[in-house]
Amino acid sequence: MPAATQLGYAAALLFISPLGDRFPRRNVIAILSVLLTLTAFTAAFSQTGYVLIVACFVLGLSANITQQLIPFAASLSSAKHKAQVMGTVMTGLTMGILISRVISGSIGEQLGWRAVFIMSGVISACFGLLLYRFLPHNKPTNTLPYFRLITSMWGLVKQHTILRQSALIGALWFAAFNAMWATLALHVSKPPFSYDAQQIGLFGIIAMSGIVGAKLSGKWVPKFGSYRILIVSMTLIIVGFIIAALFADRLWGLALGIILIDLGVFSGQVANQVRIFSIDPAAQSRINAVYMLFYYSGATLGSAIGVKIISQFNWFFVCVFCAAITGLGLLYHCFKRN
Image 1 (cartoon, helix red, strand yellow):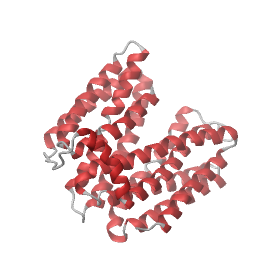
Image 2 (tube, rainbow, N blue to C red):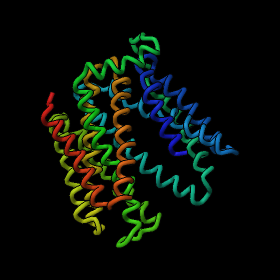
Image 3 (tube, one colour):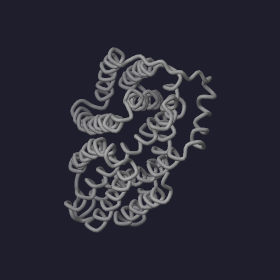
Image 4 (tube, one colour):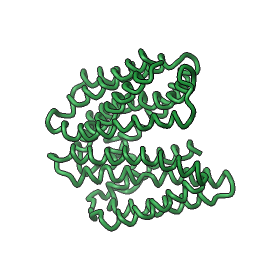
C-alpha cells in the first residue's frame, strides 16, 4: 500500500505536474482536491485489499496538489522575494509532514486506520475549498497539446544546465537523507538503545530543524546567493553524517547529526528551487516536475541501498555511504559552476 501511494505520486510528477503550465493552476488544484477527498473516503470504507491499493495509488496521484502549489507560489513572487516565498512554502510543507505523522499516529492508535483516511478526506475537502476560494486565477500562455507538453520536459533537461545540475545534486543529497531515515529505526531498535516504536517515533521531532533550515535559507539566498548556500548546505549534511557515524551509539551524537542533516537538506532545497524557478517563467510546472522526478528517484534508490547496507554491515557504513554521495554532489556543484 505505501508502494502504491509512492508510485501514484511518481506518476503524477510525470503526467499531472506539467498541466500547471497549460491550464489555470487553481482549476487543476480544485480537481485534484476533489479526487483526493473522494479517494480518501474510498480507502476508509474499502472492504478488500485490492480496492485499498487502488485508492492509495490514486491518493498518490491527487497529492500532486503540493507540486502545483510550489511553482504557483514561485510564479506569483518577484525575483527579489522568490527565496523568501520558497522558504515560507517549504516551512509549511515541513510542518505539515511532521504534524501529520504525530496526528495520524495518535488517531490510528486510538481509532484505527480507517479513521486516519476519514480525517484526510475531511482535511482535503476543507483546504480544497479554501484554496479554490483564495487562490488567484492565472492564465497560462502555453498552448501545447498534452503529449507535446509531457515530451517537452526532456527538452528542458537538455536545454538548461542549471536544471540538470540542480536536479542531480538534489537527487544525491535526498538519496542520502532517505537512506538515513529508512535505516535509523533499524539502528536504534538494537542495543545499546533498544528503543520501541513509540520512542523511535520521537526522532521525528528532531526533524523540526528542517523548518529552521528552510526559513533561514529563504532569508540568506538573496544575500549570499544560491551557489554559496548550496555549498554550506551540503557541507552541513556531510558533517552531520560524519558525527552520526562516529557517535553512532550516543543519543546526543545521533541527534546532533540528524539536526545538521535536516538543516542542510531543507536549506539546500530552497536554494535549489530558487535557481530552477528563475529559468523560464512559462515552464515552471514542467521544470519543477523534472526536478522532483530526479529528487524522488534519488530518494527511492537511497532508501533501497541504505537498507541493503545496514542488513549487510551496520549504521556506520550507511553514514559513510550517505556522506560519500553527498560529497559527490558537492564536488560536482563546485566544479560545474554555471
